[in-house]
Amino acid sequence: MIRLTIDGRRVESRNGEYLLTLARRAGIEIPTLCHHEAVEPAGACRLCMVEITRPQWNGWSKLVTACLYPAEEGLIVKTSTERVLRTRREVLELLLARSPRAEAVRRLAAQYGILEPKYAVDQEGDNCILCDICTRVCATHVTGAISRVNRGVAKKVATPFDEASDVCVGCMACARSCPTDAIAFSQDGATRAIWGKTFEVVPCTVCGAPTVTREQARWMAQRKGVAEEDFYVCDVCKVAKTGLSCRKVMW
Amino acid sequence: MGAFGIDDILARHVGQEQSLIEILHDIQLRFRHLPQETLAEVAGHCGVPLSRVYSVATFYTAFSFTKKGDTVCRICMGTACHVKGAQLIREEAEKVLGIGAGRTTSDGKYSLEVVNCVGACAMAPVVIVNEAYHGKFKPVELKKLLGRGE
Image (cartoon, rainbow over all chains, first blue to last red; front, side):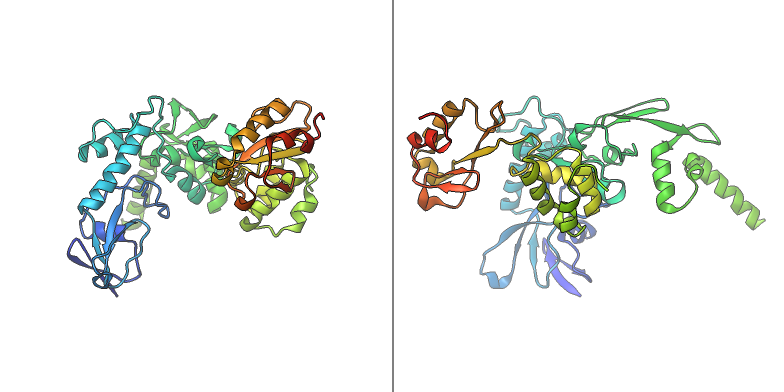
């Protein structure tokens, strides 16, 4: 068992979990934008910076990203020292200057007292803060249709050659996991468009409500070894169907 | 069986993600650019999504999707070279070749690139033509070095 303290509170970890996980379990709030339960942490947004020290460090301390730093025996973690808050504010200043219209960034910045960033605001700046959640989600759980391309100021999330992807199944996992609503898509009845590709959303075979795209059903069916048609039943009807089966079993 | 003439390159490298950069280097060397069609084959060979290959290919300046010239002239703009007048060499090169940095002449003979430190600071300023390093370089030597005029 690893024992450490976070903001003076004693916490324990059996397997060297990350500091962010431990802090949140202890009810200590650390802001994040690039953290997503469905994927491995990436340390991309730099908002979860915390200060760590040890008694034998003689007062020396350092900043680390809580989302990537594993619990260590005897570590003293502080999540809201002046140094931490100053760093966090600086990161928010930069994020707000880059993506002035991103609601999640604006809200967080306002919490830290930043309404107008001190840096030159990129008026054309889109909402993408390159947190990498979408690309990690897509690569980990779907087909890896998008990735970060280019480098430096030209870096962006895109499909290869900015063309409609052969492997994108239109599942929307990227857009739904995006913390800043930066991924453009449209859905008009049974037609969905995302990443330059148009998909047909198949209606539920029971009630007619939209379910998933044909491509997504085909991909999931292949992966799980079940029939494609199984995915053309909406969640509500699936629950109803399960309920009926249960009733049959019980009575 | 691929249609783009990279079968032998792929055969030289184990099919895993670690081989990605090596393979792209070999393709860049052979075609002087990365033909768009080859990337899917590389992805298949390494067992990674095409988007991963594209991500790597766009990250490193050593790779390009537009064909580089027969002769690639690189001008080091690192700190030491900068102090020793790399900017003058760059201006001279742009004048001699008639193209901006990062471009290739329309006849496909020359590409001009500016690079950051090449690790030969003692020889500053440095110009690299293809793989040959030329140290303590003077702008006037450029025409001769590139075989243009005089």
